[in-house]
Length: 258
Image (cartoon, rainbow, N blue to C red; front, top):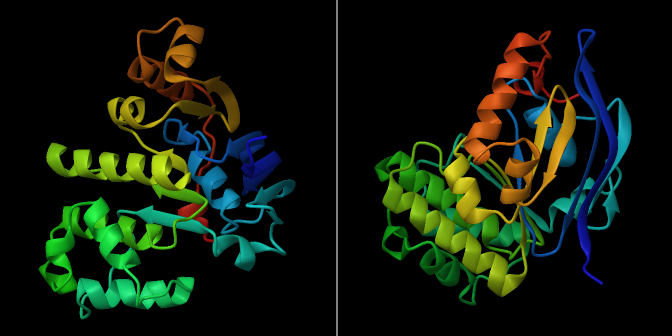
């Protein structure tokens, strides 16, 4: 039986009287590569932050790698990785020093080769001696992903992992993530606005619109269910519907954790 690493039931969240998330259910199993998709204002970011315990739901439950949130959040996050292009790096540390610091926090034996393996996986071994101030935005993204994978997490959550990256770097990210998933069995939960990237990386997509899950299946199944050619057509269709409907406030970043 395949282990479930993430289980959410009936998630609800409102801000200032506006419902951002209206009863989301989601499961991710070990080794799955799942995209959580939706147009701006659909409730995607608020859902993601509730799944990580950053935002407390008004109703519903989250179980993360076998631990119920919020009580078990610390134990759960020890087995979860998170990466996003907007997270800062320590500019006055060299990449190797930065990664050793996080390896210590994760309880990874830095005398072994975990850091070297992770650097090679994403093709940036040559950056280990570089200062944070010397890195390009794409290199910063890669280092952030390497940091999030040092402990071979059971679940790796990535918020727009290839946003603003050139095609060669995006390919390196995708190959590294596929290697981690295939070799270590890590599940991936990815948010992205790049539908072609999603189709290359993920075997399952979950679309959120108006605060609810409106589709869940393989990329081809979801496209067919909407009568569309591909995920980009589905995304544009849902974005049009979102724009025409009454606004749903997705303000987790602005409001901050509750």
